[in-house]
Image 1 (tube, chains in turn blue, brown, yellow, purple):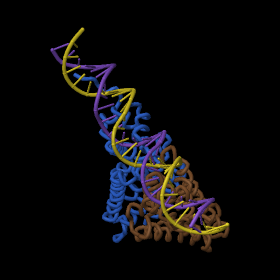
Image 2 (image 1 turned 135 degrees about the vertical axis):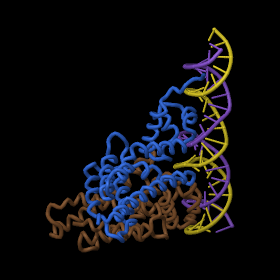
Image 3 (image 1 turned 135 degrees about the horizontal axis):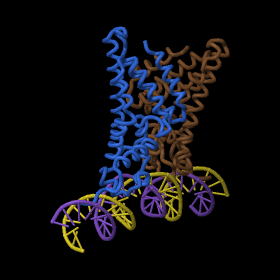
Image 4 (image 1 turned 180 degrees about the vertical axis):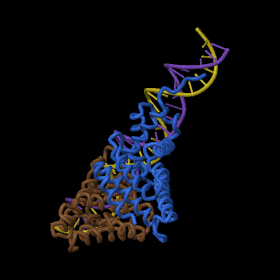
Length: 193
Length: 193
DNA sequence: ACCTTTCTATAGCGATCGATACAGAAAACA
DNA sequence: TGTTTTCTGTATCGATCGCTATAGAAAGGT
């Protein structure tokens, strides 16, 4: 028996996610967010807590949506090689999709953080490390399956592909085309032992 | 016939450069800078103009100092291949030097900028594009010298190596070791045609 | 129609942002 | 030593930061 919310919480969260994606955590002010979401500060705080929790929720939504291609590729492809190749190719497509900001939110949204939001930077850093570990586990599978020679330095390979993906995100934010990123991905796959 | 500056302008600029390098342009406040440089705001403004000009001067100093290894490598090595390999190997060393902040200032100091400092972001973006062009010109030399087959997509190679370098910077800022970066560099060189 | 509850918008909180007005202090010249 | 000039620190400017107190508006239950 009470008044109900006048805005679509999910749509507002998606708008906030895109704002953080485009400009980063600290550079996106509450005023920017409320203007983009079409609501006033008290509505934002009532629905999402505070700026940090809104960001964390936006990151979670990103991981389940725009950024889920990576987890899907690693889970669905039969071999580590195919999984890595698909991650790279889908990243090339996703990072240059004109329907949303360029690059990867996890990689680029909390790079320049002051001391007060160092924890936000650390949060994304943790997700990046988790992605690298996921790559490595999948490459380890190929060693276990005999598709890669025993003794292959899978950690080095995973670090290499993580770096390539992060470079692709930076290139995309600098204006590289989908074709540019596909060529990076194709060249990076020639490294596979 | 007047009072002279009580602080070392060069040392203060180096301190500011390191602060920007560690936290980024917007996240480094005037209060942070004056505290690190050991001077008061009026002294900073008298010596360097304003925050943006101080940053631009810090970037110029970076390019002539910590970041000059890249220009040197491209100029001094006899072939494009050796030049690119040396850039990657020296980047691995430089990005993880414990004597200064990790990674590359040009790549990481102006990623999350608000609308008001978009020009700063654009400045570094331009330097990144110039670096990529310099890589390409050096790779073109190898095609002209017959070291690479005619018709080699040198732009794609340059974009690839630029992406790898940017990924190395991100990895270094995330805590990767010098050995990690050397392995990325070595793997990246196996792509060379 | 009334009451209760939760949403909404306006306005403003203290803190910090980049940048300065002001006055005192120090160095080179007379 | 006195004058001039520029540097120095304190204290503060208006604007913006993240966030919230307050009061009015809207929706469900009776």
